Image 1: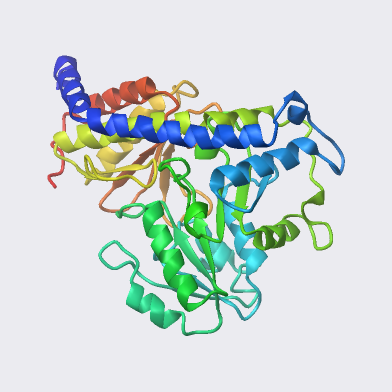
Image 2: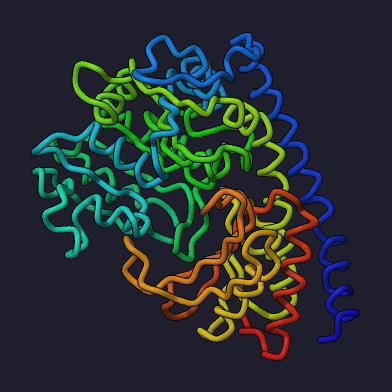
Length: 419
């Protein structure tokens, strides 16, 4: 395809997406209003941005940030720390904080994201590392049925009194399925709590924050976990993760983060909290930009004959756009185009490699200012049939558009896979 033809495809796609874009903007306004209310309620001032050192006792910035975050997530409490290294670390802290030997973890949305397999103990390579299963926690999973929670199977599984925690993954991860909506999570919470009020519903909230006008905490989820270099960091948070939920559960997770008897009372950060506060304030806008870019990707690649998920016009529960390329060659070219169109490391050519924590070779394109930040534009994929690429992020819609044009140019010599 010539550049003029590609531009025509993009322009027509944008015309078709106008109603979608308007809805995204409305959601952004509603989310920003909630975040702004949290800032006002905590009387955030410049003094909250200052760094601390040592033990970090009486760190007013840390404490205020956690209160603002809890309000934004619709929860009683939150643990928001630079010392949480990643989304996987946050999820692991939540699991280890709640589960005890003899308890059962029940994954209700199928097999969790690849990096959690080692945490649970499903990966042979993780033996001897202190996985949940090694410590005496049992594990069961329920497959999705028609891309939804299998409620009859869940009702039967909850009869097992050892079930202590139900894990639900909001995002699609590396699966060809819709992300869970907040409404679906609310239904799941009501179903579980009506039968077993003692069971904790924990939601992997990665890639889902601020996509809708409510969070899982608003509809009954007991515990949420995620990364600050994804949606809620707004592209400014340089590191960190969060756990939010019921106050008693967050407290247990804090004891796992530090130690029993100490919990959340310590933890300094010398660099200061300004980027975390500002990133949270900008997060609704950053997510809206990413959603516009994802919608454009879905519309364009659908018009070019590729299978996409979500499909154009479909309601979104996360910022991820999946495209089924059908061959490894096209998938790799797509990811390399995203890297080339990045502001950082554009000269690097990503190749598939055996990345720690993943079961297949993975290709990752992420020319980001914050290393690995997937609220900035990135693309990645496991190298396995049917060779699905996962695009996420984009602090600027214009940047996503330019990157997608580059990707289409690079693969347009091939016939798209028909849906």
